[in-house]
Length: 183
Image 1 (cartoon, rainbow, N blue to C red):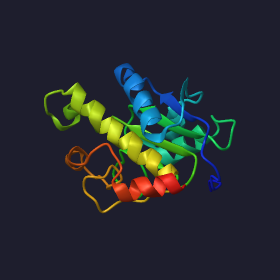
Image 2 (cartoon, rainbow, N blue to C red; image 1 turned 30 degrees about the vertical axis):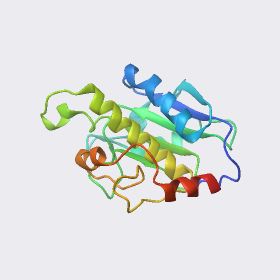
Image 3 (cartoon, rainbow, N blue to C red; image 1 turned 60 degrees about the vertical axis):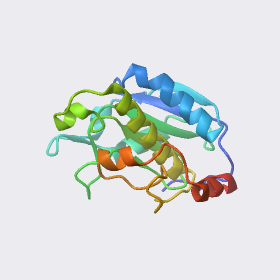
C-alpha cells in the first residue's frame, strides 16, 4: 500500500518504459510541469517491462509496473509516472489506458490503445499526443488524491474509450482544480 503523501513533491519523475514515442516525451514533460507547477525529471526506467507480461492475455499488468516504478524514486515525497507503448491491463478489466495510486506516488500511462491504427483508422499523431496528454494528467491527478469527476469536460472524467478521451479537455474543472490546490 502506498504511503500517504504529506507534502507537495519537489519533483515529478517521467520514466520512459519500452521505447516510448520520442516526439511525445518533451511535450508531455512540459505539460506535466505546467499543469502541476513542479519540475519534471526525465529518466529511463531501470527495469525490464517483460516482468509484467502476462502470456495468456498478451498484455502487461500495470499494477506490477507501478510497483517497479516506485523503486525508481529515492525521495519518497516525489512522484513518478511511467510512459510506455505496451498494452496495459488490470485483472478486472480487459485493458486500461493507465493506472495510478490514489494519493500515492506512482502512475503509468500507455499510448498503445490511443493510436488510431489500433482501431484500423488513419494515423493522426497530433490526436494521439493530445490523448496521451489527457491520460498522463488524469493519472497524475489520481496521485494528488483526485477521484473521477462527473464533469465530462474535466480531465478527471473516467474514460473507457478513445472517444471519451477526445470529448474531455486536458484541464481540471474548477472543482478538481480547487481540490488539487488544497492538497
